[in-house]
Length: 164
Ligand SMILES: [Zn+2]
Ligand SMILES: [Zn+2]
Figure 1 (cartoon, rainbow, N blue to C red):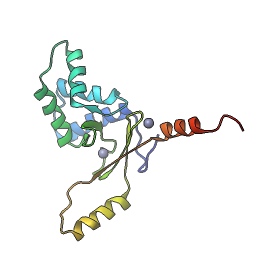
Figure 2 (figure 1 turned 90 degrees about the horizontal axis):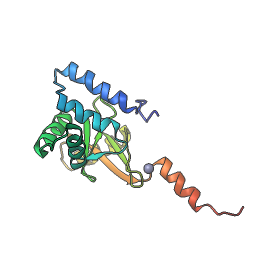
Figure 3 (figure 1 turned 30 degrees about the horizontal axis):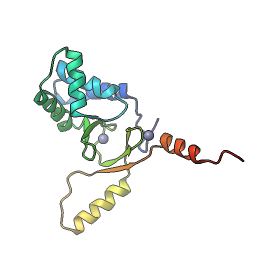
């Protein structure tokens, strides 16, 4: 599926994008980072640090210490490979690795998936308000909660009358 800026959403694409970005930036994708990358890429919905820790421990066959996971997530955050969704305390793959961006995360409250979209008009509006308040803006990520198209359609059809 293509989104507002035409990037596609395939998780396998994300993982290989991260690999290429690491090569470009001279960042090292250690076996541990690779495993966390894989866990995030196959998950349909954003994952909390605890869920990542559980899955990592399961794959390693031993209990992994929380700081290990946080250090790995910090690495992904620093390089812009993932977004932290503050309102969910969860991590989602960044779907626009190839360009710097501000954006909006649309978070579905029914299935838990998040979709990242970019709308320069929103960013401009926020930048304008911030500037008017004398605020120097560094990063914008708007988090919006609601229903994704799929879940919205399910609601709609459930509410439709049974008789014509
Ligand atoms: Zn992003
Ligand atoms: Zn949904």
